[in-house]
Amino acid sequence: MTDLPEVSGLTIGILGGTGDQGKGLARRFALAGHPVLIGSRNAGRAQEAADSIGNGARGAENATVATEADIVIVAVPWDGHKATLEALREPLAGKIVIDCVNPLGFDKQGAYALPVEEGSAAQQAAAVLPDSRVVAAFHHVSAVLLLDPAVDKVDLDVLVLGDDREATDTVQALAAAIPGVRGVYGGRLRNAHQVEALTANLISINRRYKAHAGVRLTDV
Image (tube, rainbow, N blue to C red; front, side, top):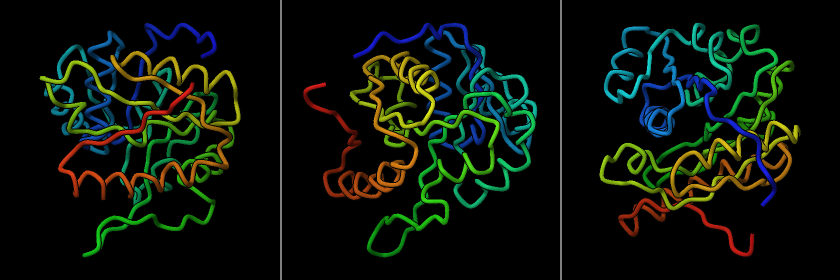
């Protein structure tokens, strides 16, 4: 693994931080000592989520979080993804924006990947946010494990994809702030589709085996 940049002290904002995935990531980064801002369309709901994880986390409307955070994680529902980012284009300009959204559908056969016109949620984010440094990461993290106070370490490799080397290195370092987690460069942003889609397979695995499966890579 390459030498990664120092990321301690960076303020992390999470758009859609009231959902389980966003709240779980917020909890782990707050535990790791990062200032954390949880965003929502409703500031009251955001503060309730922040209070539930403690460790200095604060809640605010998404626009405030986008403005104040050093790095922003997008964890909003897929159906609100594009509109949320379009509204925040200006405050997100110049920042690393980490997209962890999985465009999935569900029917009686389970989860399946949805087609995305731009290729993937991350590529849609990059199209909507031309002045931001968009990175795809944190797609396969179990919210259940992140939120479980009995789980000290999360056994997981986080695939990090993007076209800006400095940005992907920063996100790899951020992933490593969560005990047990390793950030691994996974290619250019154009390859984000299959990483997002793999989440449907993991959901099927977890249902069959009553597990919280993640991904580990060999020989890296």
